[in-house]
Image (cartoon, rainbow, N blue to C red; front, side):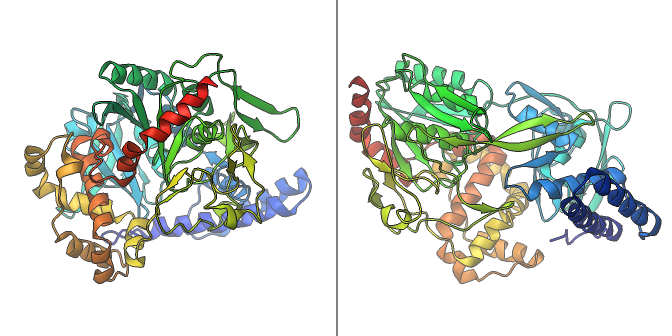
Length: 538
């Protein structure tokens, strides 16, 4: 869906040409057996397009589109990374700093929108505001750029150490040009810890970045000094990261040189085993994990290893189901290929990867309609026993592969009504937040702090009509009655977006057992966590 406020016929024609060329080149690469035939056909098609196509076409963009098409035919994760996207990927896993202008952006409706402007950053100093829609970076259109590509271009000066950014400001309905000098921006810490009560600590982090295990170790020590005797480790909405970090975090709780997981490549020789150390610093610490459908990749390796070795009690919903592992190969011409090279197997021998076709996942989820104790994993057995054989944990519990990690205590996911789901899919809450904040930010900052916002904020019911107006603007069909039925989820999502904008990452991670069902259950199952930790002595 295009930006309704601006039109760019040339840009859209150009992107259409790229998609057509992408399909043609991919078909050629797939169909011709020899490298010579492939190259000849590619050259012929390129010449025909350059000579006859109505618009000017960038050769590098054509080739990038063709490469992306090839990668998308393999699996959901193999991909070509442009030089800009590769740079951002490296920075995402380096917790120290990154080069940029100091903004957080999101991509929706083919448009890059500024979501947060860091105080005293280069963008802040020139007057860029949340809600600004980036139309051009330098002389190039930003319509249709991925988030990583846009961030890379913003960090790469186009002339004399500066970058020009053209934005559309919805409130004033006008275009504005900013000239900004990128610089090193210190990374914000992506981990929080605090006490939930007198004896239970809580840790949540957002990504398995380099040395996150060191931060977790420091967090546990700090919580123990405050009286912690058991820990809740929150992996919800954690999409993973570095595999080594998953092994290092598991080794904080598992000793005995236990095998944690195995990465198996194409040949028997291409195998990587990850083991715990002899002694774990917190081997006897009672541990509860919280997971959901956003728990993926390295998060699932950590959760799966702790489950298979009967070391942690897991509460939540079925996890995403990704146990394919990628390697990144830098290209001599810039950019990189991120290629799936391994399948990751857990200690029991199971693989939790969901089924997929090319770049698309098959829609397969368990339908758990009530809260239930699943310690012996009998709840999912009727659904998966015909497709997947059972595996045994260290102490003999049955677990299954092929569908992510199924918790030991299940919370139903809760299905949204179609209208609400469409708003979530279109990420319209970003637009809602940007529309709401200008006239409410000062009051919200005065009334709330980073520690109490998520617990105490109550959204006005007028948010429903605001969502209806935005949906109409973006031509999204909604039923107000369905939105009203999903009010709790809408209010929570709106609060998350506001908290992030007002106070940064830490605000929405602040735990609140009164409003968080999974967290309340974690506090109620500390005895089960203690029983599992006592098994480490045997």
